[in-house]
Image 1 (cartoon, rainbow, N blue to C red):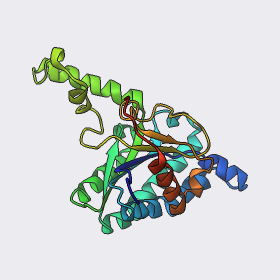
Image 2: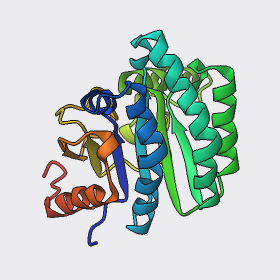
Image 3: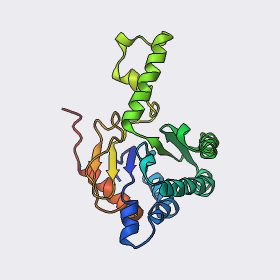
Image 4: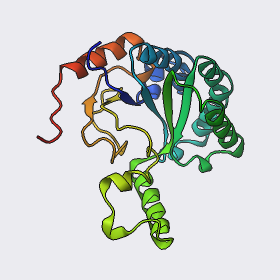
Length: 233
């Protein structure tokens, strides 16, 4: 593929709608993505020359869902970290996190930190999971970091530039995504990567995340390659 994006970010939408259409419990949509979709997508991304893939797996708003669904998804996270991410690590995938993971149960938080440490030297592809992530929340947390740096005189506010501010974001050493995909047919970003999406190409397929195959990833990349990126010019 020519002009393959370096970084693709995915808003994983439609899990519950997929389960409903298949007359399954809501959690089965989430489970299918965790067990059958993510690993093939990451592997195919690596083979296609993609260096970074971000998956928005849990937003700051998702805590508002029913306690039953939240509990079920936390158990899916435990399973994914223990089994699926272990396989990814063995395949040379580096796992990174963005978002405020301190809000998760302590066992999940520690497991997340452990897998990041264990995979830090892997180089095949970087899989970034946005967990308890929201674009506004990220920017607010970054502003607080800037304020602390200003107090300690590590940074002078009058000379703060966009490039300098970006160093305080969760994605400080991660390139902005060239392509953002939102599955499920909704045509909005819902606060995802508010800062990083300035020049991202957007792709809104109608299929749900549990139906996201490597072939459909190829189709998204092909669509991206047809576009002319102007960067405001």
